[in-house]
Amino acid sequence: MKPQAAVDTARIPDELDRRIIRATQAGLPLVPEPYRQIGEQLGIGAEEVMQRMQRMLESGVIRRIGAVPNHYTLGFRANGMSVWDVPDRLVRKYGKQIGALEFVSHAYHRPRHPPRWRYNLFAMVHGRDRKEVEQKVAIIAGLLGGDARDHRILFSSRILKKSGLRLPGGG
Image 1 (cartoon, helix red, strand yellow):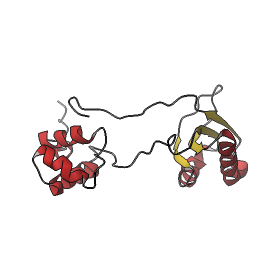
Image 2 (tube, one colour):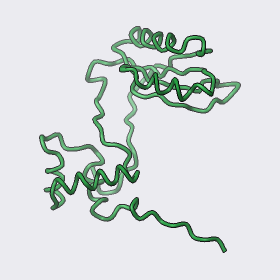
Image 3 (cartoon, rainbow, N blue to C red):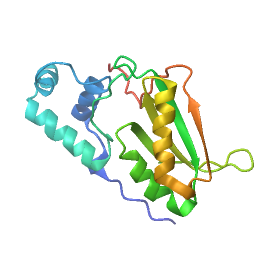
């Protein structure tokens, strides 16, 4: 008989945590004191909302709290996913360096699928037009030097709204 795995109860959200998740999953209210407004909606104080959200962040129940600007409304109309063929042993190093560039919104490792797809490092680059994206990708190419065996830019053709898991009954 196999021993049963222990359940990490710190990671299991209670009903109030679930209500906080539902109240915030579409975004925080755009008011001067968003946690106070959420607390009023749920019948608790702003401090408790913040403490519970911090605990859920630390335990991994929620991954992050952050602003997600609409880059199109900010004038960044060209988006190119730059894909790179770099030595596997260097992906982590270069991913961190590229991800820290101000014009890169995210960089990450993906598996290769030879012979059709040899690229293993991806970096999303934003610009006002395609030429600007190409210039920024050239900066990345300079950073990678000879370790970049090949790269491409896959330009976005439409906007896709990303979202995580949504609990029913929320925003």
